Image (tube, rainbow, N blue to C red; front, side, top):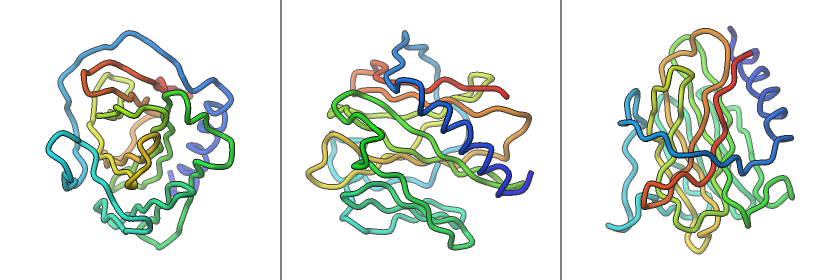
Length: 185
């Protein structure tokens, strides 16, 4: 599947999922993290698993992808330099409730997944959850002074078969805060 077709399919699924309330709550399914891991993120505080970045600071997420945050939201660019944006101020997310979004793109060499987590001042972990249950931990970033939202990113091997992986947001105690379930098409 070409990068554009993969992105279009993912965007269509994201549009369907956006119509569903973001706070899908479910019991935690503990499993050891497995799978590909993103480039290591620098820790800014011993107690926080979330890297704090300056507005507009470019984060090299690996494999030619770059991510940066502004007060308006999450920006990212692909290896071809194409830039994308996910707003946190346009009214499409309720930052007063825990939630998580997911965007992905890739090719035969691998997939780049990212999204916004919000409404969780004690957020600590995001995992990408494949249909087979494989969990891949993501790296998290946020702007200083914005405890109610941040962004996550992770790379995985190329997509096989149809469907979109799920995303789970956890707090520091390991409690599931929000989830987007995996979806087959």
